[in-house]
View 1: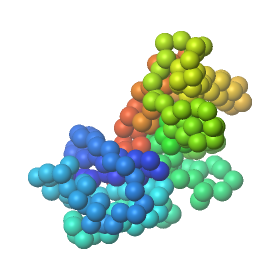
View 2: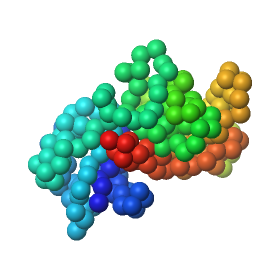
View 3: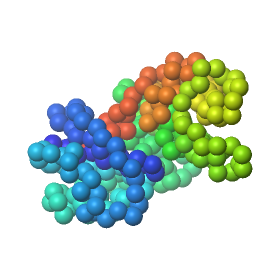
View 4: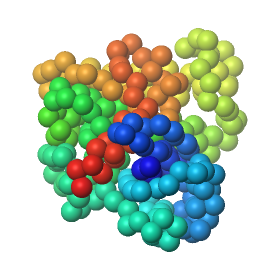
Length: 245
């Protein structure tokens, strides 16, 4: 059994793979302060009776990367593959500073099948738009994610209350909570529609739009843009990279 771990700023996604398929997926909160032992206690119930043969890690949080590497060596006697410099990814990076491109972006592109030009919309802590063609990253847009926007509204305004992430029935709200919910749901959907259109005009091509990330389930139904939802994109890309190495 292969253990795949995708570490984001908000969540750690844990998945198991067998015969090139992702068969189970779990989420835990990212905690930069947890030790290797503490992470093992959290992950162990998911492992159950599985025998771990390989471990692959994609991470944008260095302290958690360190803890998970220690966990893999201590409890599985496996040196994990960690996506980073020196690792074969099959992904070309055509940006000004390729070393700045995060492991999550690399894995997302590695998870795209075929050579078709595509725009990946990753709705995570930050919302990332990744333009890719023939396994090459050609440009990226990064905006504040939905949860960041929610926290910013509440923490930077004296009179606006905390609220749950729900989609109101109408775009135009008639009470404070509905108004805020509309802004962070329909507003993000409108951003997706607008940026997809602008990117297509800039590159002069019709793009396949692939939406992933924890909040894609909420935002995709609100978009006018036709997109494919792929919740395993980054994990599948991580598995592809592991197989190349």
